[in-house]
Image (cartoon, rainbow, N blue to C red; front, side):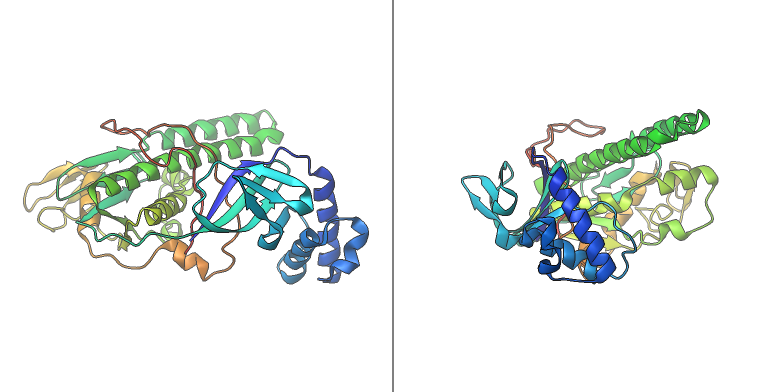
Length: 360
């Protein structure tokens, strides 16, 4: 299982990054993978070799963009809670758990070090049952339902407000011709949504862990390919990072040995969670004409998801088959907070570090 941590390295690598960019251009132009061909640039061979391998082997790259420095495992040592990279004359203290088996690599940009480590995944527990998680584009973006106890947890109501807020800001900037700040606005919005997804996934996994339950999610692949959506709904759908939230839930569940399964999403919000017949949904209201059951549509859907048979596998497991698994995605130190929910619940675990990517 691979985790990636993101920490500040507090060192000026502008000279090394410039040299790496020049080497990448040579690799792209000539296809060379020999460090002797680029020794004139003065970058340590163990770092230069990683740049050459990346840009000479990948035929899909047409031009050189931002080039980072990559230190492989053989050029890294760990001692007394400090990571040493001799080729870059760097020593980084770290605060994340030291239960990793090895450091696979470290990637450096101008500000951060992305540390990829391998950890032992715990054996999955035998769950007493499953909670269902209904993901939405409006209202609460995650509704967690336990059909055995009838308890419901609603999370992330502020997500649509965040999207609408930044959509309005972007419109004003475009109207006033301030195109230079659009990228900063977009990045700020993505960081806020990512932070919210971390808090929501933490809460969902915490709930399952406390009750010794597994987690069931809808298999939502291809949801954006459906063209039968209203214009305002398309905006909410395309700004919705449900895949990211699913990934966060998956790897955090794996770290706790909690099984995660996927179910078919068809009729989860229209089927009655009590009698199984198809009812009527209008907005957030669900009514079953067969048994008279009346419920919040998202709550009803979460109960249906929990009851259905699981299919498929971890989406992160499927991604392993598609290509590299060691690309850093970032992890930051976090504060102690809880997302929007109906009943306050203390945030008790994973307080120190935010894990970002985990792959078996």
